[in-house]
Length: 320
Image (cartoon, rainbow, N blue to C red):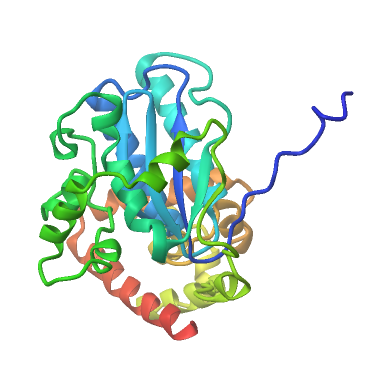
């Protein structure tokens, strides 16, 4: 085997609190129908909930998507694998197609947030004016610029507050509008015009050792999540490890524990399955899905889950 072709791909720089500009180009016009774009937005929402990433800017064009994301849990690769694999499956199902969608693995530029998060956000929001001959960024529907200029947005999971807080003045949305009008600055424009896109947009020496340590998120242990859930529902802790079926809808506290493991602890399905002694990983996925469907018709259960989330989030904050 040729030694060059056998060389491993360079490992991505991942650490807790890192920010990235992620872009992925498809091999075809992938985002051409509203149903496809809306499904992609839903997949992003699921990823934010499950993996705890922050999505700060988003633009979906016919053959690509661009994101500005932050990763409190240092899990960029895991999150992006989920987005790309789930959306590809859904695209093939909707379009009755087969095969992959994207050209190789996604590109990710590590961004020093204090210096370049705002300029990169502006670059992403201005993409429609560069690639689609749109007059103004806000004239393009699938652009999170609307989340910055208005209070409502087609993607409610977009976190605009982190970047708006970096702007001077009391009226942050007005300040961003003025920032947007200035256009993409020359340095950032030149950075993205390079044929071989560099992997870091930062000042010299970034990330520093302290950057890799600051903001490290300590996972709330599954045992703690399970015990807190059992106490909340006033059931024996051991009952969470029993699979119950019947007219009452099964073991609700057990299902809630699994859901909290995903949404609060950000554990994988495999990790949750191992903890609850479940042989088939898909059982965890099905259990969580059934619980979410059940919650839609049970207001009290929904209220209880929200209260439990607050309790667990408070516990998680105390661990930091």
